[in-house]
Image (cartoon, rainbow, N blue to C red; front, side, top):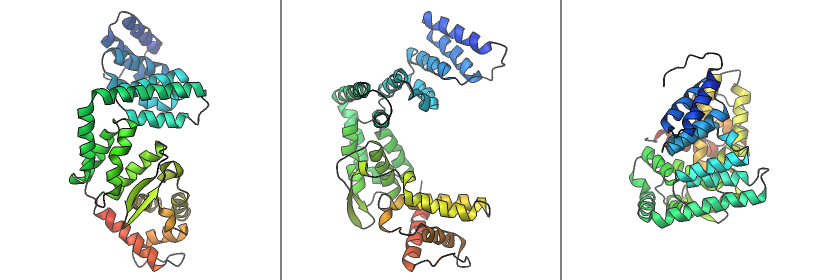
Amino acid sequence: MGDITQFPDQYDRLIRMGKVALNQQNWQQACDHFEAAYQLEQTLSANLLWASALIEAGDPQTALTIVEEQQADYLQQTDLVRFYLALLLNNHRFITANQVWEALRHATIAPQVIKTFRMMITAAELEYQANHQAAIQKQAEGLYNLTAHPLAEQLAMLTQAEQLPRNVYVTSIAPILTNPYSHAFVKTTVIETLVQLNIEQLVTMQWFEQTKTFVPADIQLMEESPIFNAVLAALNEQLATEDPTLLAQVMADVEMGFAYLYPFEAEIMYNPTEWAQAWLKQLLGPDYTASVVISEKIQDWVKKLQEMTGKLDF
């Protein structure tokens, strides 16, 4: 719909008209009224009404898109959490549903309610596995052959794979982490998903030329890494007022480089300030005077990470 010219009480009038249309089971008209109201005021109430009308109109995918605009608000009330989870499951967004459940385990929600939500998710996953074996097998095979596709397509396939039930997803992505030809950026995406799923079993992966193991439940997301944030803090302290444009550039560079090291960055990154200076020197060239002595080993690592980033082909 186009822009709405707002008149006094226009929002309330549109909400009333939408509710009348709902009661008359005129789903599309209800959608139109609630959408118009939501354009005027992005309230949680209008969001919920519009999403509910979209579900009745047979468009749960758009309903989910609308709900996720206010996801944080939906996670504050038990009834809204139930509505959101049901919508995720209706769209076969099983991994997101499991991630939401893991986050809710640490919220102030009654244990019995958490258990009920777990049962909702498990029942939906079992039903999907029983009735969509061919689709599951096709996605699993696609993940096994992921490296045969361009990087952008690989990332899109990973997103699509989040429609797999939790146990199938965890099994299907295992070869990605052990495949020496899997891109580190893809591995990082998978690892962070496993962390958000709170996977407690040992996971094996290829990290550069080494075979290593870790337990996702025991590590943090990359953005929560103390070392990562210490490097960013060192850069911010030096460049925030001196050169904000350079700061944004080097921070993006550091984030990309860090993705290759995660989740074993602590094994080589002992001095955040030295690493911050090494990245600046690599970016600005030999004329840059670092504030600390940079070891040859760290210089080599930063150069290697930048070369890997430069070879990215989306």
